[in-house]
Amino acid sequence: MEMVKKHIGTDESGKGDFFGPLVIAGVMVDEKSAQYFLDLGIKDSKKLTDKKMLSLAVEIKKTSPHSIIAISNSKYNELYASMKNLNKLLAWGHARAIENILQNHSCEYALSDKFGDERLIQSALMKNGRSIRLEQMCKAESDIAVAAASVLARATFVQKLQAMEETYGVKFQKGCSGLVKDGAKIFIEKHGAEKLKEVCKTHFRTYNEVLYT
Image (cartoon, rainbow, N blue to C red; front, top):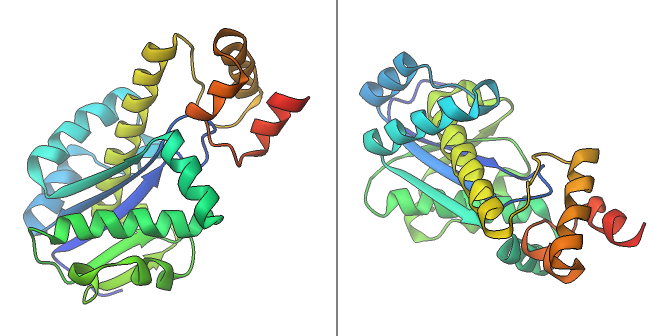
């Protein structure tokens, strides 16, 4: 891949987490902001603590054009029921993030982590994004714009999860482990089975395991 000085990177957070939203973020960098982000130590959010991520997210928002699409559990479950395909839902979110940035900024190239057919994002782009050159690659977080997007997406996910904990008075574990199931059972005891869909992704196998086993 040739070096592109100004470009948009997109990444998502929450797709493997039973509890909490799906968040997709886009960040546009140029040579100057890319260097600044490297100096700050921005990298793939999976390699950063929540505390570090939250402080880096503030700097990213101050420095670069960006877009954050946070899809609440209720909306996520509705979209998934309609699309019946996670990759289509992700493509829709990545396309929206790119479009939002392109509304006020010109850019010819966007890069995202590979999660499905590139044509899914391309076909989801509207008029602003139709001319952009779009590429997906494995481990795209090695690119500084994608790394910055991963930090924004994960920081937003963490903040939304914390807000949910305050609203419902329940601790929501990240991921999809046995502790997550325990948390779901505690939630049901406190709020009832019907409310579970407000805080989780209902197409996960965990949902039926918690409700029916």
